[in-house]
Image (tube, rainbow, N blue to C red; front, side, top):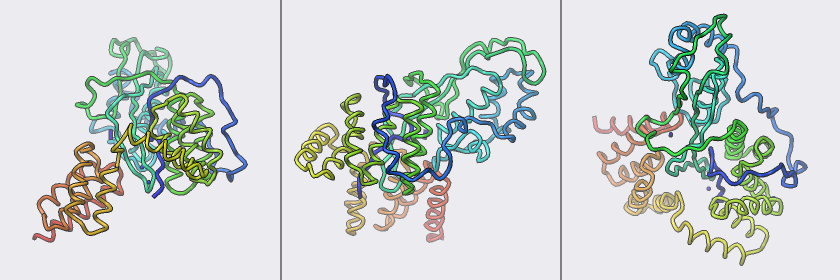
Length: 389
């Protein structure tokens, strides 16, 4: 489905898995450096059903479950026009209850909400990490590598109970059914890998950590990343996030061993390399930092957002043709990212190319992933249309 002045990298959902860590190593934690979190961080809150969700199960799903089966009753709720009417919204990663209340979420939030309903219905749930083309986003000066997860509903955990009736086995519920929030045309030929619920919990907490960091709530970011590691010590992405937090907090000595840990397990992890370049420079080891930066440039000579940043620099300098060319190069490798379309539209607008500007702003609106961005692009597009009426 549908993230840096200082460059920090963190994974929004998931990176390729490394060999699982055998056990939790608490040497990477430095609780004394951070204030307590603003609110308790509890894994059990992630999948917890709200009273409103339980009422929805009993009032909306019960009758359909008796006639169509529990899998189909859940699928109807997710996808039918008369169901939940879910929207994609990447503004924050939500718990099951929050996604249900908002009727919106990013793909991880919607997977969590779906899993919570499925377990309430007595359905067996399995999670998959989905290997899709690399996607990137941005939140302030933090760049985000966006992964994707889905879930499969298998045979019910029991054919007894729920709604006070015995439900007979149905062929449709004896076969795994994958629930995915990618458009259907993107689901063909996707490679997946099964992951445990501990990894899904760690993904959620890592997201919350990155979101806190992007808002400048660095203490909360630390505790979210820390708990992500506690929940799933083998989920390497959380260690990279923790290293970025130490670096942003002014603790490069604490950051280095965490990032080295990531690179020991994933030697080609360019996000961890980028963070380590900054850490080594902050430690005064400029030659080592420069050498690693050169290695990184060889591996990834044109990292995500490099053309976009060139375009933004050109916009600030008033060189609209150069900005337009740079934004177009970025769009060539990430055609669905809304912000690239928006700024290309503004470059066209500045050059008086109003038809091209409208086209790019319409594409930005179509591909927007938060309600805030949707409102921004819609307003800009409306003003542009008014100029020509």
